[in-house]
Image (cartoon, rainbow, N blue to C red; front, side, top):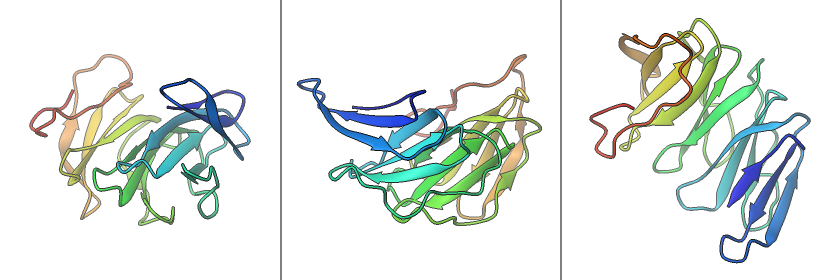
Length: 173
């Protein structure tokens, strides 16, 4: 189990015993989000300090440098199903893509939301990303071309706070 808190740390716990394994320190603001890589060897954390950090779960050590580029709070992070890519959603109205092994930026920010981006997720096959924002909209993105797919999904009357694909990728929750 990994948890992030307002104390600016990520803690890794033994799920069987509840004993702490590692305390990961380095963020200068509260930790808003985190995700395990599909193989469980890495954790990515996102913070109010505008950075992401990639951690080795066995050693508890930081992998590379802090991932910088966002100018607002990092609100959501997700690994692609194969672990090769990380998506981050930010208060700066953008989504960024990062190398899932090194933490290096993969492209320019994805823009299209009119307000903070609250959440991001990958489709089960890793080909698409969905993002939800304070602009009450869901946007879909093609991972390979880094371009938006179709028109915004509209209908919410308040900020979108969660997005999730169905297991077969046919539906978005």
